[in-house]
Image (cartoon, rainbow, N blue to C red; front, side, top):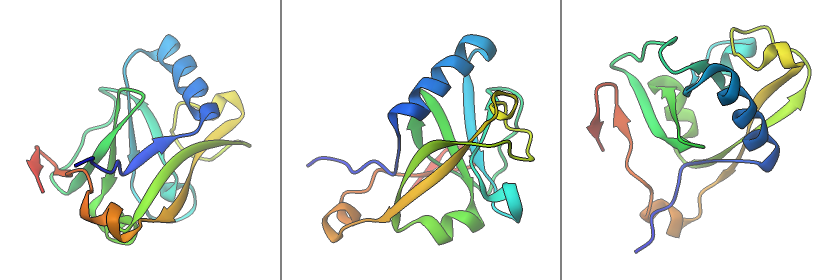
Length: 129
């Protein structure tokens, strides 16, 4: 039985991630929730953001771990997320901001079949659910 990925990227986002990796090395993503740009996915050099015990690992995009705060995950757990980019400077610490673009999430609700085949998540230190 195939496993349904929870997260993916657009071709344009893949290009930006590749450019950022060439500059910064290994990367990771986190979406914390909150207001304004805090609800956008943020990209960091791999060791520049510390994951907490309540953060949820959703999977990898372009060999980069993607985490989401547990509160935010409760809103998004029934949706497939696609990371994309859009022109404009966000007001966050995400490393793509100086490029004049920012990452954003596009979403759609999982089908019933996809819900039955979802890839596992990990909480904080690696507990698989």
